[in-house]
Image (tube, rainbow, N blue to C red; front, side, top):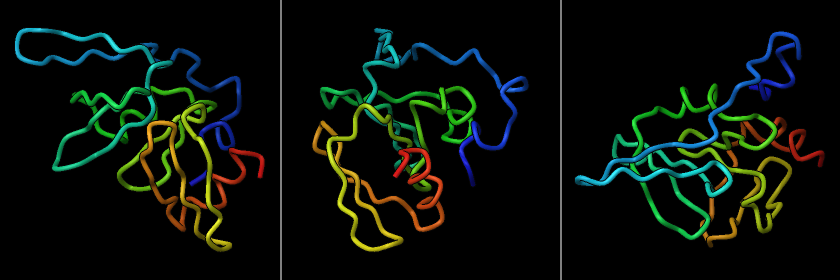
Length: 126
């Protein structure tokens, strides 16, 4: 599926995106700004927000919901379990025409799914 910016006219796009997320751990609520986020992962039936300094926070959003809350210029869902931020990409390995491995600034490695490959390359202007 193409990024929202490719399929929805600019006049109909949601221009208000979340600028921060909150995560409760025990009796403490943490505020994490989107500029601190490296990626979102879905693991063991929970969504995990991963920061640039590799801290993990559980949030109460599905990846599907996050796709509508995040600015598509900054975030891209590369596979069924991961949304990455463009600023967090350190480098990529082009393994074949249809396989790309992303390496994030925090050291995480994630593969772009074959079905997202073309849209991902377009998002990056590759």
